[in-house]
Structures are given as structure tokens and as C-alpha cells.
Image (cartoon, rainbow, N blue to C red; front, side, top):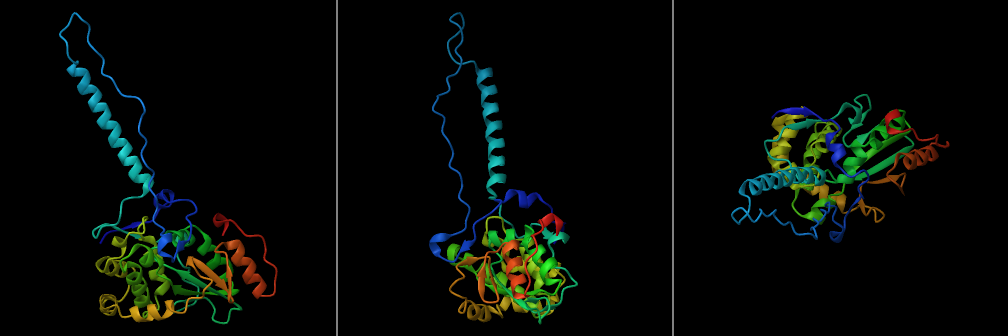
Length: 295
């Protein structure tokens, strides 16, 4: 399957600050669509003079009709782009994770733990690979800042936990299937590689079509996994029971995704809040948070 480099186009089509996805069925994170507006005026065709035959000017009618059709096409395309209604198809090109937001290769990895095992601060990260707010956390710069300024420096380690809230609110098993695929990658010590690929190819509308079994296999292949073991693991749902067990012990303070807990205390999923909590765990005061572009 063809690959393309992730750019800024998709990020621009998303809301700047989507609300965290809720685990409650009544709090689904699907984007609402704006309702159309009706004009209060009624269009009236121009009438010909009394010296000509009565009836509409057919040339004028065709011209106006063509203009209306053109306007409707433009409006339809624009609305589709703004609302992000396009969902991934099985044969859509895969998107390669952008270098700026990919997990740094120099950071130690042990399964789903990122960073030095002896770090004084532990950031427990609860996420869903279908979650739009998790995408913003991952691709919007916060995760990159955490990795480069807190994890790479040995101040903290990040431990991933699955919370498949989109399955709960919107149905299907796509969140679980994506989580299982990431566990299968973890078996090859490539969880964070797969983590980056899954978010790069997530549906902007959190649609399940992004993570069909066939597409998860394509993503794994593009990510460079050993397909002999990965394929069997994904197709058999090898880690589905492990995911269910982990979700059974999610802290009560975690009600949506993304959620971050530092040394047992729930912390806002912003770099400033995480930096402050990590500094406290290391017995120091946090320095002013740097902007994503300066990380």
C-alpha cells in the first residue's frame, strides 16, 4: 500500500481543542454537524416585455441553473472539508508519521513503557487510538514536549494504558482491535512505533473504518513489523483479554481520554501541568513551559 508523509493539512481540518472523549455512552465524541440555513426570500425569474411571447427566457433560466449547480458543488466540497466527513477506505494511502511528533528513537523502550525505568516520575497515559482529543495530544505537540523535555532527560517515564472509550460511545470493536494491534507490536518491542503509525492513520471522525483488521495489517507492514507473528496476533485478537483486564482496573478519576496520572495523582493533560508535576516528583520547581515549536 502506498505511503504519504503526514503534513499539516489534516491537523488544520480538526478542531483546535477537541474535548476529551468521555467513557459515558451519553458523551460521545463524534463531531456535530452544522445545520443548513434557509433563505427567507424567494427567487423570482425575470419576465420578458409585453412585446415578446410570454414565458420565461430559456437562455437566462439555463444560465441561472448552471450558476446554482456550481454554487452547490462548491458549498458541498467546502462543507465536506470543514466537517471532516471523509473516512478512510481500505485502499487509501497510509500516512507516514511526521518526524516532529514521532517517538524519539534514542529513548529507551520496554514494551509499553517509554523512558528510564528508574525515573522518579511515572506518567500513566490513558488513551484510545480512535480518540480525536488523543490525536491532538499526540500530534499537536504535547507528547513531543513530554518526550523530549521530560522523558529523554530522565525525569519521567511514560506508561501507556488502553481505555477504549470510542467503542463504548460509538460502537464496534475498532478501538480494541487497534489496541490489540499495538500490543502485538509490543511483543516485538515496537509498541511506540505502532503507536505513532496508528495515530497518523486515525480517522478524523473517529470512524471504525480506519482500523479494520485488513487496514491494521497494512499499517503493521508499513511500520516494519515482522508480519509472520503480527498477522496471527492481530487476526486472532491475541491480547483482547489483556486489554479487558487492564480496563477493569482503570482508576475512578479517569473518566475520558486522554488522561494523565503522575505518581498516582490525576493531572491535566497539558505540558505545563505535566512539567510541574514531574518537577515536584523530582524535588525541583518547574521551569516555564516552552511552546511546541520550541521543544
